[in-house]
Length: 162
Image 1 (tube, one colour):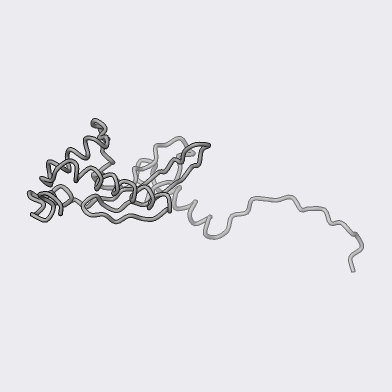
Image 2 (cartoon, one colour):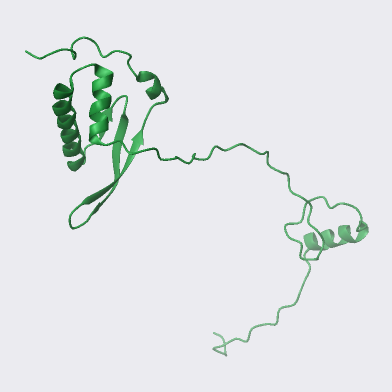
């Protein structure tokens, strides 16, 4: 058993180990103008550190800014469908309105939509207000969506209904 409960800490002295002594001796023999074998990690001594190996520059594509065009309203959508399909306006208007209501109901049910050539629609965020709901959606379109414009919609949509 020891006689004293507390031992006093010993003062630390700087002692060189064999490895650090050999390193100090080697640096004393080399002139300061010679380049060191390894690049210093920091410039504590005031000298400029050796430049690290530079990475190759790579081109990174950033998202392109989108310039908003004019807003397409329901009337313009109906007119575009009539022009594209060749049907009469009185036939196309209820079909377009029904399609819009079906889409709105699907979004209200938080459903994902896969509607080529429009694309895949996913709801990312939802915020409910007193009289509205704000949805942040992700729309993914394939690059071939512009090519998917049919020149003629076929003969089944044209003409009068029975």
